[in-house]
Image (tube, rainbow, N blue to C red; front, top):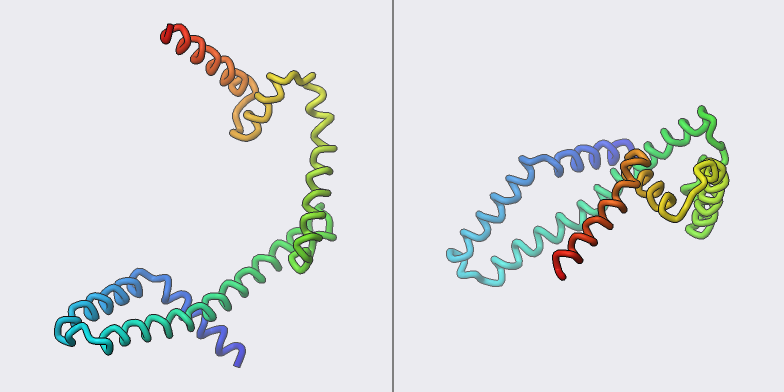
Length: 167
């Protein structure tokens, strides 16, 4: 039964994401809208589309959620295998089952470890406030430190020019 449902939900999820399915749904809506004058825009006419879309939406939620759960579990298994076979800490395997508070604590420890490992490298630069800003810009936008240091210089030149032009 489970395999049958899995196969069914995969097929429905795949079909639901195709352009042809979208086109068919649009054609159904157009046919419904065109039939309105012939049915006198009656409550039955409205009930037809409301009931149909409600039932389809209700069922699709469960089918798509089932597919997403399996996809997420497959990705997690692959990541766990990569962690297990690499130099990463095996303690990270299965952390998706922890509470939000436990995950936040792990994330905090990882950030602290990253800071401890990168701080000696930053001290080697003898960082000044100007250079610190430039370094963070360089890291964020993946440009060289020299290019990042030009940004504040260019900004200051622009401000001086704007001030001079305004006066």
